Image 1 (cartoon, one colour):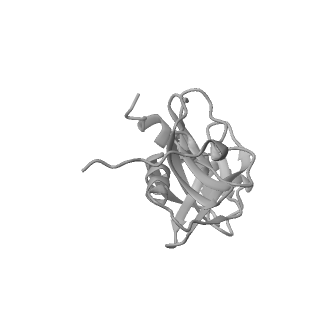
Image 2 (tube, one colour; image 1 turned 120 degrees about the horizontal axis):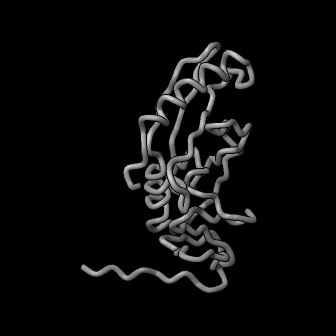
Length: 173
């Protein structure tokens, strides 16, 4: 069976960079759409694309796509500290393949994930693939209630990140 892919109307086309291509899209209204590309997700009302590596969670409720972006808390020498940003919710009356593509791309950007205990709580250490970047981008996302700025927490995070980074490499390199 041959599937005919719907073409994104020109008036809904976001500004793409070189080598970026649309992989799925769904109309929200007559004048707005959510567009997934090989590099990330364009959501109405946002000025720029959210890279797949910048999305913590994407949940499909059957009518709404809820995307939780990562927000930068602090840039550290070997990794970044991130937290959940405000969830972005879009209603998609005819979602097509978009929810599946979003979930596949977000999940596919994760090369490694491990939850580690740290003083006062825990941290999830994640290595993600970033398009057009060699290697992996390492991030730490602390459990609620864990103080990411406490010296003992910083030290307890740096050690496993360095250890994981030394042994885990992007298999596509």
